[in-house]
Length: 147
Image 1 (cartoon, rainbow, N blue to C red):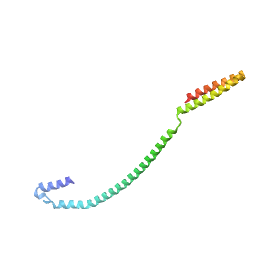
Image 2 (cartoon, rainbow, N blue to C red):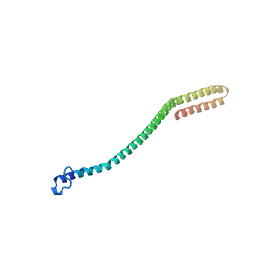
Image 3 (tube, one colour):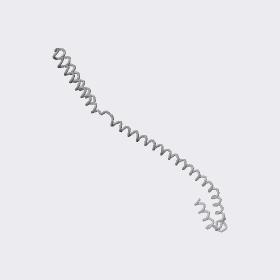
Image 4 (tube, rainbow, N blue to C red):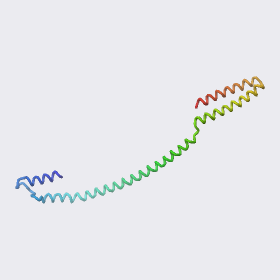
């Protein structure tokens, strides 16, 4: 549009007098620009209204998405806190190993007590209790080694 107006003014200012069609103050150019403005103004207003509607809808969608994200974040925060609490209550590997080892040691002590009692009774009973005791020791090594 700027180029058109510039050419219009240049032609009607610099061209020979008999070839000029709109002399200074360029009333015909003013009429054309006013006509263009008269049909452009309503279109511009419509476009602005549509853009305002789009912006309002986009703002509402952004607000809703932000609310959902906030709710998701709060939920995940609560879940993370509950997981941290649950992890604190879990049985650790070391605790489990120590409990199994102490239980096996108690069993071995009982077997040793039985073994000494049986050894006094019969020599065959002594060999059987010895086999049981050695089997329990091997079980202890396997159980502790598997953890």
